[in-house]
Length: 212
Image (cartoon, rainbow, N blue to C red; front, side, top):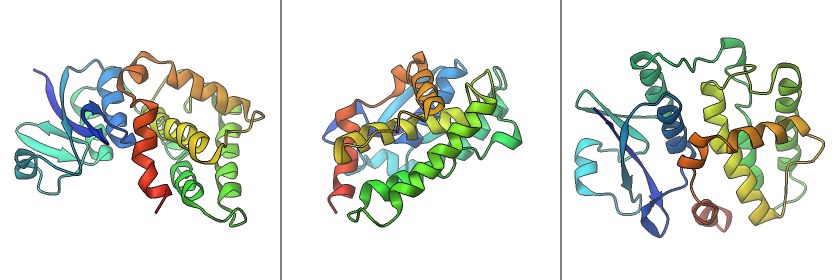
């Protein structure tokens, strides 16, 4: 039986998959594990009544397990790994935190109005750490095969690439060759193609935060 999954609908297009990286992380996990699922697109600015009844916080992503809706992508991914152990996406503990500072650094740089506040340097430092790790352990974070940490990083890196190019005319430096190779590998996966938001919806999602 297909799992029911609630994910963000696109800003201004409620019938189209939206730009939530945490929603995409859950969809990627379902795709990589070949778990059948059906999606409910939730318009976050006008949440459906039925959804608030089953999930009063109204957060996405959420998955219905045994008649109960569970939100928080960390929790959901953990349950999926437990209930559907094959193929395993478990990341070895020593690699689990790789890249964990990138998303916050990206958001701070994206929203920054001051060129000299150090946010760009912080993001570059995080990306250099990832590049160094991939140089020694790649092509994926834990070696030859995709694991949960890659499926968490992939949507965040996609947002970084799309939003920084659009809003700041900024791209990941060419000398971070391992990061470039990594993003190319992730973004070309069938699971990623199938679950990513279109670029214009990523931009629409970030616009209010950038212009705040």
